[in-house]
Amino acid sequence: MKTTRLVVAMLGWALTGGGLRAWDYEVHRAIVDLAFAALPTNYPGFVFEPAARERVRFLSGEPDRWRNAASDVVFSHATAADHYLDLEDLEALDVKPDGLPVFRYEFAARVLAARAAHPERFEAIDPARDRDRTRAFPGFLPWTIAEGVGHLKSAFSYLRAYETLGGTSEEMDNARQNVLYAMGVLSHFVGDATQPLHTTRHHHGWVGENPKGYTTDRGIHAWIDGGFFERTGGVQVESLRSRLRPARVLEGTRSPEELFRTITAWLMEQHRQVEPLYQQHKEGKFSGIGVDGQAGRLLLEEQVVRAAQMLADLWFTAWAQAPADSYLQRKLQERLPRPSGPLRLLVVTGGHGFDRLPFHAMFAGFSNMTFRIVEHPHAHAWFRPEHTNLYDVIVLYDMWQQISPEARLDFVRVTTSGKGVVALHHALAGYSDWDDYAELLGGRYLFKPMTLEGRPHPASSYKHDVRFRVRVADPHHPVTRGVSDYEVLDETYKDYWVASGVKPLLTTDEPTSTPVVGWAKTNGLSRWVYLQGGHDRNAWEHPAYRKLVEQAIRWVAGQTGD
Image 1 (spheres, rainbow, N blue to C red):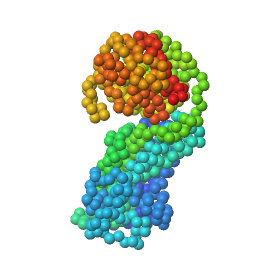
Image 2: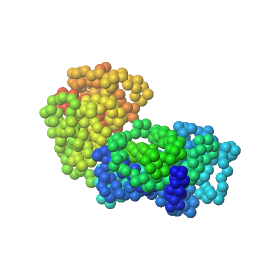
Image 3: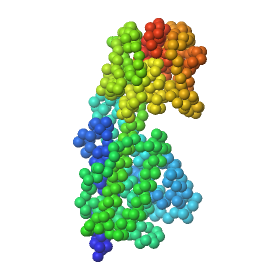
Image 4: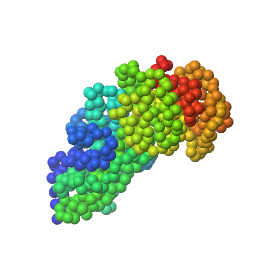
C-alpha cells in the first residue's frame, strides 16, 4: 500500500512538469539564503542589501530557465550538459575522476576520441533524441562550476578597479550587478552538484543491472528535486543555519588546476550519496507519508547544507583571490588628475623601535611634501578603500607581523593599483609568514632557513654600527640620479633574500651585508623601492641617504618623468 501511494504521489509531481528541473526554485533559493548566512561581515556590503539578495535568489534559477529555449539546439548544445556529470560513464573513457582534464574541450575531445576508437563500450545514440548533440557526453558540471568561479573573480576584479580608482556611479552599479549575476548563476550549479542524481547515470531511475531492486521509475528525479520537500513542508532554512561555519578561502585553490581538483573531489563526495538515496527510497523514506516516510529529509537537508557551505566558500574564495584588472586600472589612472599640491606621504611604523624625532625631521625637510605617521596595530585601517584618497605615496618603516586576511586584500589592492611604495630598512623583516608581501617587496629577511626560487637560503643576520661603503649600481635611474658612492655608519643585514626580478640600484662589498642594498620594481600599476639603510639618525641625516629617499618617493609617485 505504501509503495502504491508513493508511486501515485511521484506520478502526480512528474505530470506537473517537475521532471524538467534540477533542485526546484525553492531549494535553489534556500541554498542561496543559507550561503548568505555563512558569509563574513567584511564581504562587500552591497551584496547584503535586500534587493541584491533577491536578485541572487532569482538568478539561482536562471540556468534552468535557459531550457525554455530548448528548441534552439545551438544554445542547448552549449548549456544543457552543464548541469550534471554521470561519473559511472568515465570508466568507458579510461579516466578516473581525479584524473579528469582541467580543460572542458580537452575532455570533450577525449570523449569523442574514445567513442570513435571503442564504439562497443557505449550505447548507441538515437539521433532523434539528440538534436542538440549532447548525449555523447557524460556532462560538464565540474568545469561549469570552476568556470563560474572564474566569472565571479573577473567581476570582483573590475569592480575593485572602479571602486578604488574613481569609477563613475554608473560603472560601479553595473559592475556590482555583474557580481550578483555571477553569484546567482554559480549558485545554481553548486546546488545541482549536491543533488546526487546529477552525478550519476541513474539520474531518472536505476538503469542496467539492478540486483538490489532499486526503482526504475523516471519520476524519482523530479520527486527528489522538489516534490518531496513540497509534500513535507518545504525547506526549513532557519533550522539549517546552525550547521554552517563561516565561509573561508578553500584550501587547494591557489591555481585553476587546484580549484578544479577541489571541486571534483567534492563532487565525488556528493556522488557517494546516490546509493543511500536509492536505498532510502526503496525503504519508503521519501514517500512523504507518516513519520517514516519523511526520514529521507535528513539526507536531502544535509545535501542542501553542503551546497550552501561550498557556495559560500566559493563566493568568498572568488572575492579573496580576484586578480588586479591591470588594463582597466591603467585606463582609470589616465582619468585621474595629477596632484598639483604637495605630495602626501603615509608613513607606516610599528613593530620596531626607533628615534622618532630625527626620523620625522627627515621627511619634514623634503620640499613640497606633507606626511602623516600611522602606527600599528591601527595602521591597516589606512589601506581600506575609504582612506586611500588621503595620501599619494606609502612609506613602510614597520616590522609588523600580524595581518588579517581582509587587511592583506586591502594592502595588495592599494599597493598594486597605482600607489607608490618606498620601503625602508626593517620593513624587509615585516610579515615574515606572508609570502605575497615578500614578492611585492622583492626581498625578505629570513628568520629561519628557507628555500626560495628553488634555492636554499640560510637564516639572515644583522650587525649594528657598521661603517661601510654604498655603491650606486645604476647612476641613470631616477632614484639614484645625482647620487655618488658614499660611506655611512648604519646597521647591515646579511643573507636576506633578493628576488631575481628586481632592478638593483645600490650595492656594497661589506662582508656583513648582502651585496644588493637597494632596488626598484613594479607591481601591477605601482612602483616600489626598497632601501636597506636607515637604522638611525646616522643614515637619516646623511645627505646621500636623504636624497635617495626623496627621489625614491618622487619616482614612485610618477613625478620624475621616467
